[in-house]
Length: 377
Image (cartoon, one colour):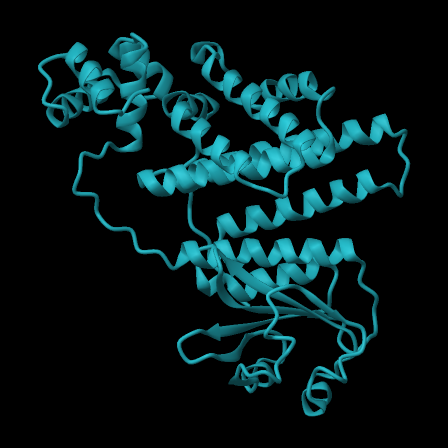
């Protein structure tokens, strides 16, 4: 089975911090929206997450870029250790999800050209932070093996692996590979994707082991299809009363799990997980974990289906935005070149481009116009 991946431009810690500095106001507004409008978050969790988000953004905006080194590990390790007294597993997970969602929303709205590079860097940061937090929790709990906290950390790590896989994937052609990795990550022998076509109200098998059998599964979604009609995950220890006998025989089914793939009320289809004829149990926590898998695949499919239109309004490239931010902080061309690994000549070209776009006669006017137009906060 073949799969392909995009090649990503690498990002440095200096560039990432600069990106957050430049756009901190908009990112903070997004985090406040997602944090305060989510009714399922308990007030105590909301307060912890708000403190984490505030601390993280202050770290970014108050850091001296010139003092940073390329390796982010010691930089974020110091920050995480300072937050351990207020973090619990739930608030840490919510902090990660809200920050990532806020960044994705902002970058889609602004059509940020380096979106993939930034997302990959964020995933690298959180992969490191999750492992660091996991180690701290294990030490704190004196290596107790079976606790709710350790189960939640396992869940965090699995979702992190899935996030990284989805961000790295090229598009629909990687879906078969993604499903194979889901089998591996979540310890199931078979994962199948059934697509839903809303305008015809039909479903059909798309991807999975024994592909001819999978693709033979198609039909209209009627009242009889109570399993596929559900928008919540369903675990069937014995599917006989819910799945046609011919389909049970065709796939040698015993226990099976159905997971809807949904994004913003749009139903893309369903994933099924099973153990190739072996009966198995499924806990409520495992079902909730797989529900998260469905939601993230829904986000992946919705993003891959978008068409980016050209913005007819004033639009700066990501590099121009970074240079604009440094201009606003008073850096000269030589310093900017050193921070962004560019020659002074290249920086001058970018500054000239900014002057043209902003109809400015000098660097001071560039910054003033950028503030007036809302390009700088």
